[in-house]
Length: 387
Image (cartoon, rainbow, N blue to C red; front, side, top):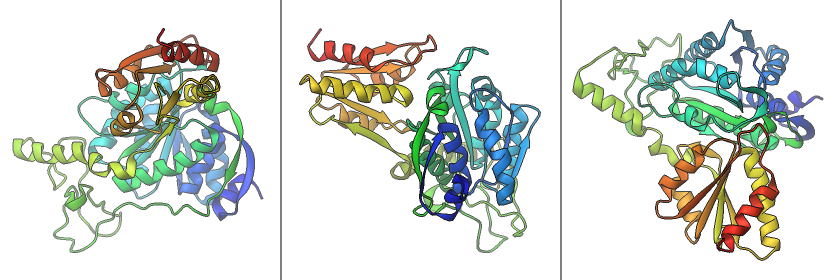
């Protein structure tokens, strides 16, 4: 029995796999049955795996002519009722942005994987970066909500891929799975267990067809989608629309429907939020990090604690919406906060906003190398000792 069979049958097995391999397995286990993409380093292994595996489960793999078409195909498949995803890296993620905005505005469930590499432009295709975290939130024009998940291990890529599909379906939203090249191509031992996962399904239209409004959010602010062939009249557009789905520029209708869209994810934060706090209860210094930088920070915390220094780690797993309440709780006793990241300070800016009045220092590296535990430990030690 291979790993994909294990994921589908629910029988537990332990496999040595890469992060991108884990993503492909998680997608299949979550019920993904459509992938459209274009090869780009360092995400190509996801497409390679799914090209072989999707046909085995009656799924469809399409290599499109470019990233723009890939995102459009994913949106179309999802509107047809299929769980769908794409995977890319920096330049391809940029090309997908207009259609990601369409998915957010039209509320089309889908999953977009962005394996971060060095930039800008073509940058460093085989080197890691963490410089797409703002683009993941604000990359398309206009105001819109989106969910972004940032796993930090191969095992977590598998579990967060499962969760990404669930959140996309439950919240009727695009979900971005964002991780760096190191985690993508790192191989670790992972326990694949599909037995405990019940895939979420989207909210489908029911009741009288004549009364159906495709963008009536109801009590939970999430509109029910019309399943193709069920006879519900629906209209989908990227233009600003009313509850009927048809375009409008009538100010009251625009305000009412966009306000629901903007608030939709906030109303479901209990479902969306996820983070990890390590040794933060008594921490004088709290490190805030994601991805491979968080892996290095975990070791740095161990080194500092061995010296008797009160250092902790806060790691957002759901990055957008940002877990502000959880970060404030984790840093409640901290005199200083350290943010190691492989960019020029994108996460640090978020932390400074959330923890206004707390001393926040950045440790930034954008050379294409990962930040080391010793680099983080040295700076955390200095902060803990007041240097």
